[in-house]
Length: 304
Image 1: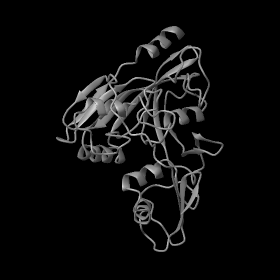
Image 2: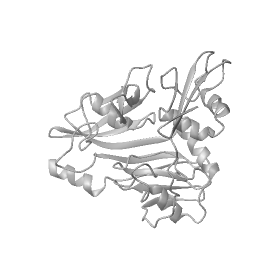
Image 3: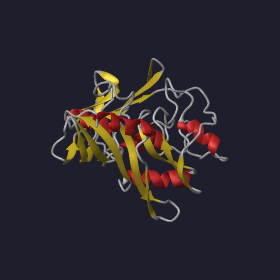
Image 4: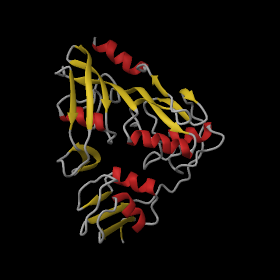
């Protein structure tokens, strides 16, 4: 192990074949839990032979596994009385309609005022999951609004995480893109990985470098030179919808990272409008829907 700007960097050579990547890493880096390891793999901080990989990759003798561990945010996560728009709550979970502008969990530059802080304030007994991401099973970008599931206990967290892993959870988004997208229905399949020129961005990359990603869409209606879409990501890569739509030449309106700023609004027109999953306690399938928030509805009115 070597230290580079307070980041721990491990370079390991595999000596026995057939072991899963996530298991290999947790065995050779005891400071990492299985969950932390899988998160680092998903974030591209663990690579095999300098390429991104899946947690379940079976390693071969001679493979070089590289691991980067950034020190955790030093501040202690504290409860904050932030109002939550709760669509559903039971003993296992919350379904929250997150407003745009609310970061899901603390990160560099956003140590407070997050959904995670609000969850600690709302719950009488914090979930025993992750100190910095209590109950967080999946994420929405700061400036994406809509529905997000929060686990209230570790059993529910594991159950929901497995549903995401098996792709049995249904998610749908409403997105407004610049241009008249054709055909009216389609599937975008392209690997996604870190942009080599800007680590804060993701990008469509060659098959060997990133992770496979698949996004379905259909046109709801055309409005002038814009297209309102329903988008269903079948995988859960970082910024997946934004990257895929930009890659085919139809960036989301207001997305300054992958397209351009818009005079119509100050954030990307992306709203998580539907989520469907099985309740951990009963296995009953449920769906929740969220209408467009006022700022996005006003954009549609302005461009009609």
